[in-house]
Amino acid sequence: MNNTINSILNRHSSREFTEQEIRKEDLNLLMKCALQAPSARGIETTNIYCVSNKEQVQMLESLGAKEGKSDPFYHAPVIVIFTGNGGTDHDIRNASAAIENLLIAAESLGIGSCWIHQAVRLFNIESNKEVFFNLGIKENEQVMGAVILGYSPKMNPKTKDESHIHMI
Ligand SMILES: Cc1cc2nc3c(=O)[nH]c(=O)nc-3n(C[C@H](O)[C@H](O)[C@H](O)COP(=O)(O)O)c2cc1C
Image 1 (cartoon, protein in one colour):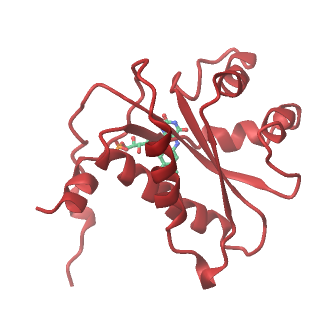
Image 2 (tube, protein in one colour):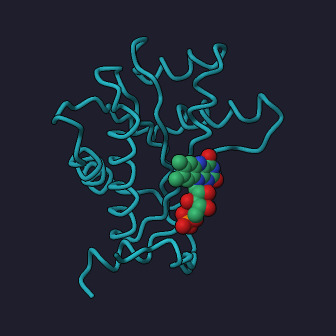
């Protein structure tokens, strides 16, 4: 099997992270991989906000605590927020393609990841908006999803139900 297939088949959601930081060069490369995703009619609607600054990460984490819930970002050292600017009605699909690219690229570098839809819910609460705007997200942007990244204890990927595959 080649490296790309291996990364796809070994990808799994990670929700526990060590203190080890991800190198800036690796983060830059991962964001480039996310950006390389396809987009409907080639219109690039997705903005990517890669948050590794500890204070800003804590601000995002605190949004869950405010609700009396555990941290929706699982204390990951890096939170990547994907937004759409309403340029087309494909924003969600464009962002989802970028998110999946990031998950697979992270696996290929031995970095754990998890898609976090909770970020969308948190963004849609009016009193939380300021925390997102402080990252540079603009008023015309909507959060489409987020990914957490960090070094994580190795786990086996979940077994998927192959009855969902229909070969015609
Ligand atoms: C659209 C979407 C939203 C998700 N949102 C969350 C989330 O908010 N929190 C979380 O812990 N996991 C989230 N996940 C991860 C799923 O729980 C995970 O992919 C699923 O359990 C399958 O496990 P696997 O990724 O290890 O194959 C999300 C996944 C997708 C595709």
